[in-house]
Length: 104
Image (cartoon, rainbow, N blue to C red; front, side, top):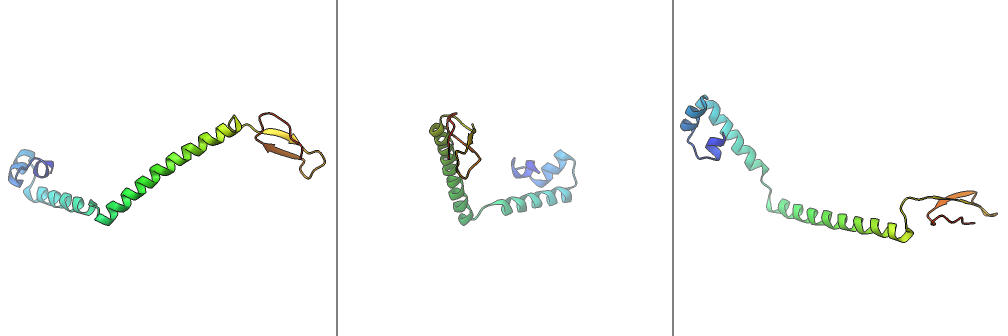
């Protein structure tokens, strides 16, 4: 099939080279050509794909910025501090506070 589609062999040359029935090879080539036509994107689909890829890239960058900002703002990442209530409505709370106890 690749001989006909990519290397410009005729069907007869390819069947002789591969030892395949000409009708079988012809069917394979037709199916491959039909699949390649079905896989082509319309101009609208290409434009949408371009915009989606661009948006995806921007969102990944924003995610990294937010991830770095959250680590920088607390000085450490995912470190919970147990706190005790001082007569408030909270008995226990877990907050980000660089190892200090906080009363509510």
